Length: 236
Image (spheres, helix red, strand yellow):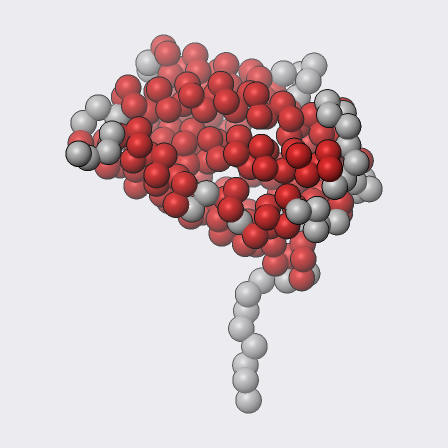
């Protein structure tokens, strides 16, 4: 019996799920410094700032009320001026010894830039059903499992009490992304209603996971080894 469309989406995402990246393995074991985890957060800031713009763009283009409502609901949660999620991320960065007001101006790694650029190509050039699959399933749904992996480490290895303000960004995404993720899957499954759209969704999810993995590679090499690029050395 063939797998359902839902199962195919999950399997495609999980083949290159960033929760399994060596950077998060080290974080879960408490083997990263606070500064290294904060550097990850600066790149996540640059990524998410563009992700929110992708959602706003798609919300302006998609005519269907339930999809628009979901996008605006998600944006509203992220950009609530009284409790903005990117400000929560800055709380963690500041608690890790990095200046809070430095985040926007931090280096954007090549892997981060590549993910940002690919995302804009996706929303501009891909039918919206494929684009939302890439966004909701290929990218956003990963973060729930990433947070489930590192939150226990923040308690055990980094000394943060449960519900501490400094780690709210990670703890609250466990709850928020559980809700957003299920709604995102439901929308993709509802509107990818032809074999062609389902194939497009699976392809876009696969591309999204590959781009996010490359982004994590870039963070790993810079945070742990100070390596900003991968130019090969000439062996004489």
